[in-house]
Length: 280
Image (cartoon, rainbow, N blue to C red):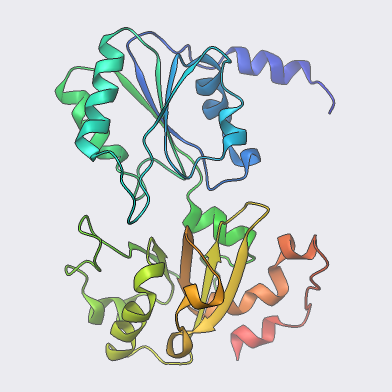
């Protein structure tokens, strides 16, 4: 790789990570190349890194070799720290004068509980910075060749989580309103309840043959994509698919046959004339 003196000078102008601060950092959906410069800057300066389950270890390797690591991952059905305990750990580490990088998969403020942690920092007079990351609901789908918007299919998109704090489908979702108003729906953490969600949407008026796709382990070498429809979603675990997964529903899924650029790197052929399938 060629070294660019201007890039080095630019990096030197990035913020200094001061002791007693917490930086809430988005690590992106998985591919280390999707880290922002601010994220890399945080990793290189942090004394302590508190990281989630979905952060790839190749990203952790960027950190200062003397940094201390604390795992704070949450995976469904497995023992994990309580959210309040994680937030208070950040407070204590900062009060000890450490430079604390709270590293989260995706974006801290997109279904990442970053706001909850930031509010705890505010309550305890801890200074913090938020470093956004590429959310899997956008970046992960882009790697699968599925744009979340296209002017001939949709002028809006809805992002929602597939389960609440109790692990069940949120009962606050207006399924009738969602089915009527959002041509494209992107769901996080919904794989376990995909069949139930599909039924709710069809009961609310969505067509059984509406395109639907699951993108598992998005942007990583093990990424898999399963295309189906609302009416034939089935049990994904029976097909060998495992979370984390992003689910997308809508006509934009049809664009994948033409836009699967990542798959084309592995001999998947792009169909140039497939655009007519979306407009049909």
